[in-house]
Image (cartoon, rainbow, N blue to C red; front, top):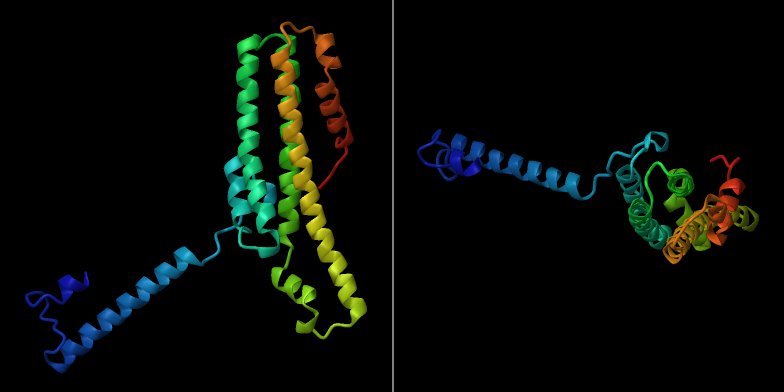
Length: 227
């Protein structure tokens, strides 16, 4: 647009011509530069809109929510691992459903049992992600840095210890939730392995499968869990 406006045959605006034309041309270039800089800043540095945790529904929503915290230095590795877990969970579920569709009819009780357990485990997985997001939402990185660097603050030792305890609990909870999700992924791997080993299934046999018992126990342990 600037090239068009400053063209000799368009509007008569010319830098180096009369004072009014030069002033207008310089102003146009200056405003254009500001617009370009603001646009670049918005794209590179402006924080994305964060969806409230209670409104998150899809895997993409979870990824977008985690993306907001990707630059939180104390948790960079944990957030990266959480991203990887989301991808692996989607792959495990797809693989498991494909295996079930190959071995059973969707109307069979065996299929329904495996599919139901898979769905329950997936719910637990995303419940852990929600819990992580709830903690991240109230985690203050700048305050954490001050607490972990005593020279940068004038707090008493007792107060610093209490603050460190609080922030260490944040970190421990997030790491624990990620560890729980890793355990869930492992149990799904075991389930796939056990399904592939068996040639035929009876509903009673399914209930006795070691991995199914582990998964059932995990579901029961978290039955009354609340965020």
